[in-house]
Image 1: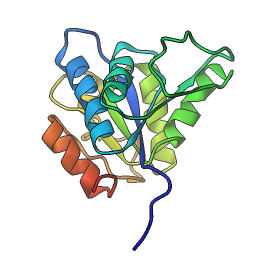
Image 2: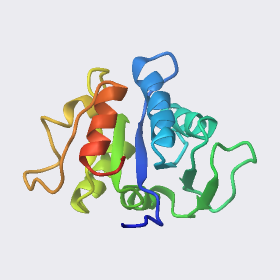
Image 3: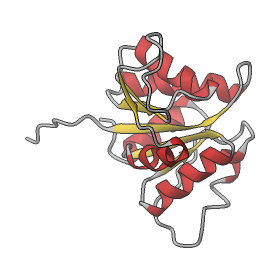
Image 4: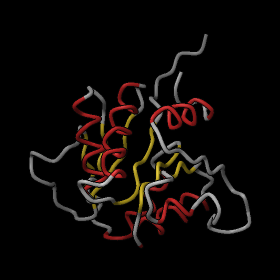
Length: 171
């Protein structure tokens, strides 16, 4: 029998605004990851990544937050562990590498950067589809032709859980 010491980790990348379906699914994803015993890695900088972290903590999960400045955030920051990297946008590489896989929700330029770095370093990508945004296009438009890692789309918690199980991240 193999004894797991390190919990699986999944990064939450992206952006979505409160009141949107993508925002609500981001929160649900955080809670699901906690329920499955998966550590959430989130910068908590966008509303979507912050609600994922808040809901993961609310469900009893662990959240690691890698923040761009060199200062600690306020004590109400939604994280179990905070890593202020002092690297600005270069933090995107840490976000891309810190997970066994990366959930992608909506997204803007910073998300695209993180996704491309995750792709280059062969991290599986789990884009939310059906809610608009950049993640919606990722399955049909991967970063390049190399097929470095799987792109496993999801649009519901059942689909996300299935994708996490297919990667061996949830039992």
